[in-house]
Amino acid sequence: MVGGRVMLQAQKDEITEHVVYERLSRMMKDPRNRDVLRRISDDEFRHYSFWRKHTSRDVKPSMFRVILYVFVVRVFGVTFGVKLMERGEGSAEELYKRMAERVAGIEQLIEDEDKHEKLLIGLIDEERLKYVSSMVLGLNDALVEL
Image 1 (cartoon, helix red, strand yellow):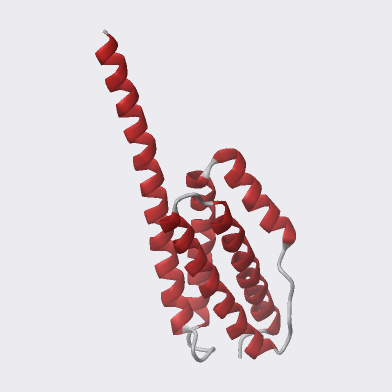
Image 2 (spheres, helix red, strand yellow; image 1 turned 30 degrees about the horizontal axis):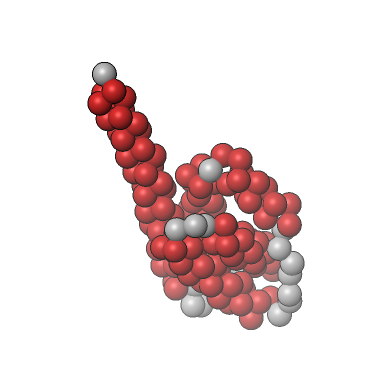
């Protein structure tokens, strides 16, 4: 059996990520990005519920981390904020892989975390593409003026 502290921390991380992704989804103008973040948020809540069954306790999100991630996205942009969040997804996946032999049903969480990481990379690539296309259009306008 995995230690209760580790499970409670995993549970807290999941509910925190649920709140972060939900708030970020509300900030997105692009409907596709909004939908991706909402789906990830829903999965994170399912993960929280999985851990709640194992711990028989409710935990609150880390509001410090929620505010920090939202602040980072507002100040530095989606690409930077999502890259930071992606690191957390990778950490969760590694933790869950170590727990796989001792916690029944954790395989779905591992698959979800891997899927989240890929979805977040897709968001980053799309944002970079928009940035690069804006640069190209700007350069094109400058050349036309010459």
